[in-house]
Length: 81
Figure 1 (tube, rainbow, N blue to C red):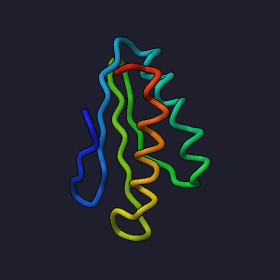
Figure 2: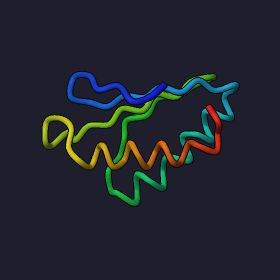
Figure 3: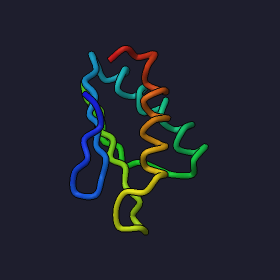
Figure 4: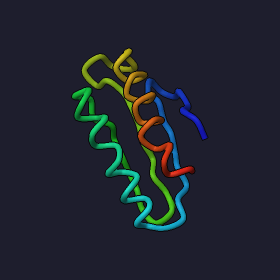
């Protein structure tokens, strides 16, 4: 699944085979977020990860959200999901 733009946010959901893969996927998102100093809202559990990007102080999407989406796409490639 790719990014979906909805309600002033970019959303992407991942299906994973187990909880540890979900956890590792979330961990892989930390470095790109820190590098851009832009932090997503992330929820995860057994078999799923949901990432929401928005710029709260701008009231919606900015270029930074799209930059982080690209960085996240690159970070998750090794997971082959």
